[in-house]
Length: 149
Image (cartoon, rainbow, N blue to C red):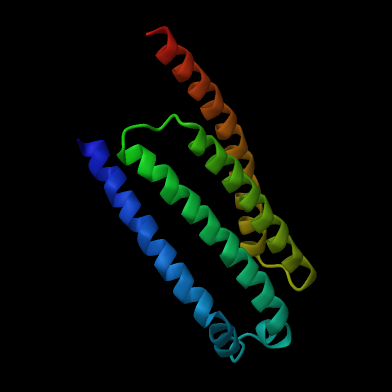
């Protein structure tokens, strides 16, 4: 019961993240222009940063969308299905895209956050791809077991 409540709470947080992400993408050009008053790099590279942040934001929202799909199966108590394998594969690809796009910020300027975000999303992409293989195996075992019974 506690795990199901945690799953519901997580689903609500993902719903909020999707709405908040859409709002943030909508105000992104204004936020970058405002911040460029305080950071000379943002002032100099504002349109490049807008493109990079917007692309990263789109892929992040795609990841949240896939997570929401997966949590529907968790709430339905049927996690080991092929749609979750597909979602994990897509999330891995999206994470690699975020890492690749963020890597381009190395050519504008390097900060510790650029390194951390690039490494984190690269590792998340690898983790997601491996987890997809694990889920794929679990789905095949589940299907075999269901056919046996």
